[in-house]
Image 1 (cartoon, rainbow, N blue to C red):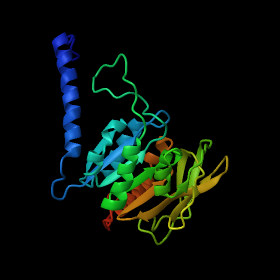
Image 2: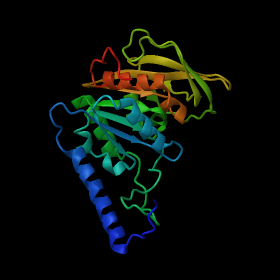
Image 3: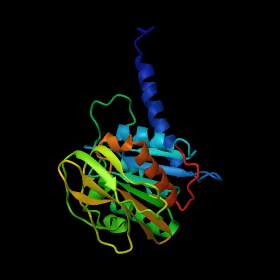
Length: 273
């Protein structure tokens, strides 16, 4: 039965305070030292042209059997050096100079605060230092490669910064590296709708994992690659403009394998489907 009770003003205010307090507790949890055996994953995604709700749903689905602690943020203020210092795997899937909207912990928002900037120089340096010096794994997903003003981040993932755009079309993933742990055993994956974003790999140390080819409008580009960076590793995977990639069982398997590889862990022989 649907309740006809109207929440009191006190109840509403109490809920707002509780929401803000919960947000602070989660941030404290992100900064706290990891417990023995804990794997901590931070996903920073969702922007003005990419569905962060779908990303979170299907990323959680892909990794549910790992037992890892998964944290999702959509405001860059939470991607601090303190948070990154305790992160085993950072998944970055954002493009643009600013967050899509100003963050608020309130349940009802009439006027949103000013949005946070995309990774500040301090945050960008923290990402790079944690990869190179501490061995944090970095997965740069889809649109991350479009942040051309973050030249050090683009250098980290191994590409030459350049603007790019592409029509939506069915996309074929093929040319998988048969010897790499991420792509071994794959032949072809078809994604219903996606972009073939052309990025020029500018580092000879990069290992190409597979190619993306448009099936109706044409176009071909590197679809995935990886590289060692100091103590850490970086994987870049370009599919993911629409939900079609995130809902693909085969692509979810690529994501899982990439996560294990980038953290220098052996992927279970039985898989994690």
